[in-house]
Image (tube, rainbow, N blue to C red; front, side, top):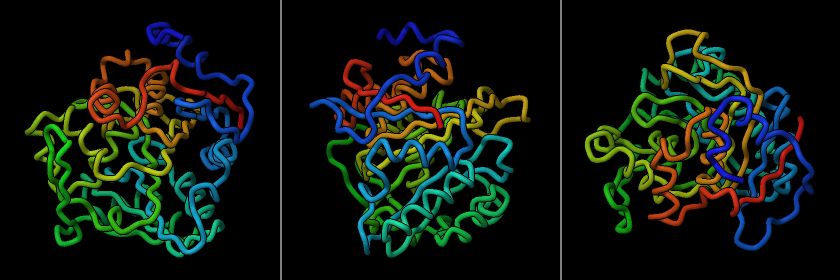
Length: 299
């Protein structure tokens, strides 16, 4: 399957349309399993997709501490597509608790003021009703310095304590256009773990995004591609920036998930270079279709 076959609109979606797949089977040796679900509401998409990865109990064990990291960067309501869908985040929290999690914390290092972002995104209310806890991320004392010698541009960073202390890390980005990094999805979502994001902007943003994934690889990635901001990201200008696709991508491999996400945005894979850097420089996953087992489902 040649990635260039997906650069035009209809072909991109057709590539991710449902095909036969066996639920919860392990992928062939050396392949990353990626589940693509479409045509449902965000919570229903997750309910369908997580079964194909073995259910939440494959990721969360009784007594574990879980951290869920959505996009909550902007003081905007869900219909604007700037933040992760609150219904999806709530369903993930509910399933973690049902699997026996001792606690589920949810946070993001927001771009706008944290309190209105948490409130107006709808995520705070949804998480608290589901039994999770919102954690603020606007105080430097809540971050601890970590080093990663294998990083190429960002060899040390202050990372939020919720990520460092959790037993399980679930990465839940929204898919959207980004003016500086081209695309937001799994790898770009790591910027919300870091205290000094300006360092990343000043020191080769593309490489820093790839480096950031070294600090804590997620146990599970869930890409919210229900409402997709096609233009004017990361904040957007109006609802006219949004295409309602009703998709979701799930994988333990953030690189593979991002590689497939480019098809939904109709971007050439090589236009988002941090994806290949994360694969080729750090071995954090695969961006090659031939090394993925793609399970396509209808919600």
